Image 1 (cartoon, rainbow, N blue to C red):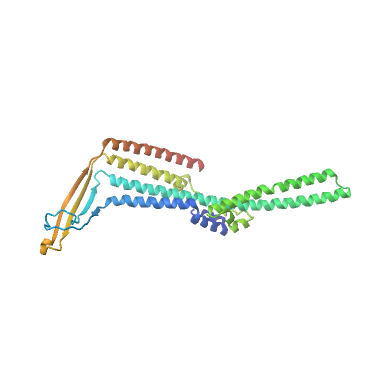
Image 2 (spheres, helix red, strand yellow; image 1 turned 45 degrees about the vertical axis):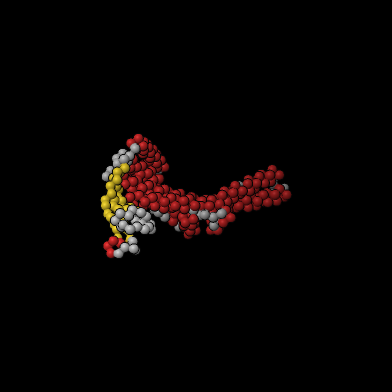
Length: 324
């Protein structure tokens, strides 16, 4: 489930996860990448619509019908005929790229939540272990005091005292590693939530009992698990985007045909009546012929990239099967 960490039923953990989701630097980078991909997709879609251009200037002239100086204000409208699917495939590639980046964001989110939960559980577990270790030290100290009293009374040997002292030293030596591991988990938790090491969340520092999950995670079957994995979705969408780019490259083998229209408007304050206006409209057709060597090279590049993406997708699926 999306909020699987709530199976721990720990309000402190819920708050830490929400902080990590809103402040984690890696997630902020992933979100910025997603916003950029969406903007690129919007730009690609704009290729479906006509484009316009306008220019203006000021000049003087006597003949409105023949003047071609800076006083004209030409307007141009152009539209590329997508005869060979270049625009359509470019839009498809941009959409698939956006889906791939969205899956990458989901993957980053899964990692942040998992690492935050793990760091919190580790900190609580080490806190519990430290409590147990301190109890062991207290018991060893009591045992040493008792045996030392018995030795003074003649009912215990000096060797017994040394053994009790060794047990105490061993119990004391277990504390520093546990304390160090707990501090490392707390520092990691601070970094995951966008804090400095000196700003460790107080609920995590105060936790001394490892939380227990209330039930088994509803994983489901292997097929459903593969479909939910964001790394598999990212690899599949990247493969789709690179496959679409082959179509874009193939379309570059053919001429680009652009239809358009242009109009001119000119006003002269020194002339009266209909002579004050001058305009013209007409169709525009332009052909752009490709460089065949460059186009075929780009097709080869697109096919090679698609093959690499296919291999990455196969690797992602195999890794998912191994981990599941």
